[in-house]
Image 1 (cartoon, helix red, strand yellow):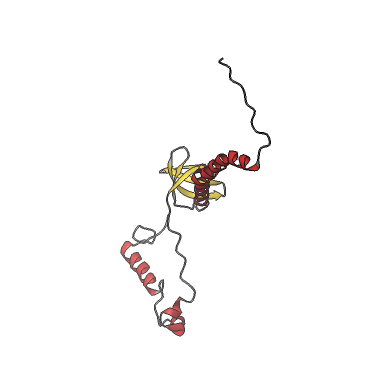
Image 2 (cartoon, one colour):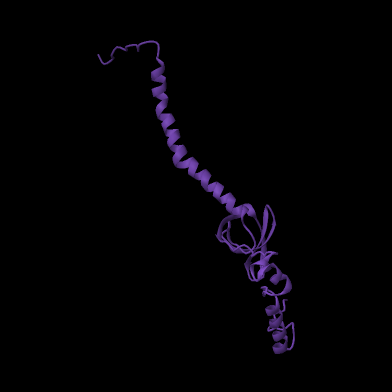
Length: 160
């Protein structure tokens, strides 16, 4: 009464039914790849590039939540960072969570043939054109010594 007869399925599965059975799984994997896996790989690659480009003066956020300023790049795996005035710590490069601000790269010195641009080649060699660090810089140091009296004072521009 309550038990119905069991009918056997038709024998011999065809190849089309196997493909249709796995099609939803393949579609889910493709969707996961484009929505989750690929963007994560891009972010990871960008983070690695940021970490490799860290240099002195950059502001960083460590994995522990400390904001610091990089004072020295020790090697490929280690940085020295200042977290407060006079407080320097060594940080593993892999523990840097983010680079907050980048510093400008150091300005290169003037090219060797700078005199050719100002007054021509002979003018640069014979002093016809003023060079950037020439007589003006010497005049300023002489004036600074005359005003301050000492070359090591604050007006003289001496370094520590």
